[in-house]
Image (cartoon, rainbow over all chains, first blue to last red; front, side, top):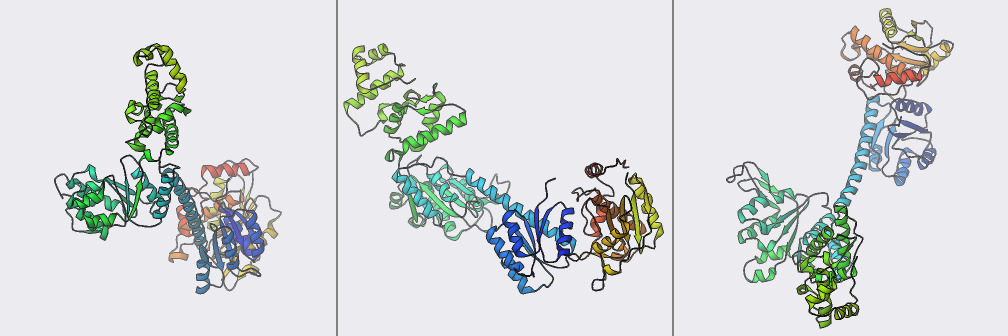
Length: 449
Length: 183
């Protein structure tokens, strides 16, 4: 039978060592004994003990000295000090030095059993809690927020800096650039990570709904309010509130928001009770807030309250070196999710992806790869697997406007659409087959398996 | 088939001992009998604590009973202690031959001043079975219905069951060379 736990009894009195060993062995513990601190340390270095029962007064190394030495070695070990001569200063010193408890001989057997059981339960809970935190850290890692471009490295650095503070953050960037992911990354790197991050899409809710959504409401506050409900600010207590599309908030709500962000206090709709909440604010917008301020559509005081630390996420077309990395990331993500085997993306398809200007940014790239994984019939993602709008010339690289580049892309498009039927492609292109072959060779076009 | 030998020390309640023998006979198939041996406990007495040192009493009993076959249970009237604890209800040699049980804290008078002979008998049987269980190699059991559940206070003695649970019974059988038939 597996022992309940491993105990080490350290006492210079033989009878105490024997009694405790006997008592705890009957209870199913594995018990070792040592008659002084030095031997105890040797035992401790060799074996793994959950609990040490240590006499305070021993010849040579005292119980307190042993306590500090074993704590240096393993801070998770539980040390219970036993003394025949209790004094308040020594008890305080023991507890300050990390002892779990301090008991006086003779000890009530029931008390000692409970102390050990409680100590082990606490240790197990602590271990379990640490394991859970590790798994939570793994689960909540921000998805998709990847990139090796200089722009993204700067953003990672900014996230790192601002995460350590409670500063209000404004994230700006085009739609689909990953503003929410940046907000989540800030949250999970902050001290608030074990509390929730509450996202509010301010643009998606009507003013009346937004108010009850943000502040909650009391039962009967309005028609349909059958129950009392917590608002987002209350739910974000201890954590972070992410106000997405902040530029679309009405003038009335801007006043309310300013007040609650400044005071961290509010009342539920229809209620009188003042509710306090400890939250961090991260806001995001793709609108030019400065213009809205100039036009009087966004309060200047709220703007300055929110725009304390700005993170600007560049559009995907301005960090094209991240496109292959993201494309392969999404390829792996969707092949795993769909249980499909797609090894790679063809050079030509990647060329298309890199040259496309991605108006929908990372979100559009993600959708494009997802679709490609669905429609692809081979192990390689090829041009024809990409969505039409991606392979359309209308969206191609604006830098290379040469006739040759246009011709190459157009011939490739037609060939792919016609499954590389040379005769039909030549007909469609209004050129003869020989010319088409020459152009295929000239541009190095290849049919993918 | 192992005998159970009960050695009363400073016990004046002969009825209780007879009832214990009768009850244990229903549980253990070997012979359960009383043995009269003069065990000196003077050396085991602590005037400071006004208690007897359990391990020392047991050691003294071992000296006089080494030739006896079967298990030897010393039943004493006085309060027992081991130096690190305030008291013990009893003590046993794990996987051994000898055990000791004190009646002192099993008396209801000790707690409330009221005599309750039935309760004393019930508690005594539980503690004897518990200590004999250790002799037969049992550790404490997590099942509250089992007499081998740890009981460091009298309330726990009263709460726990009055016989071995099936799992503990299996271990007793496995650890006992002689085939026993338990009721």
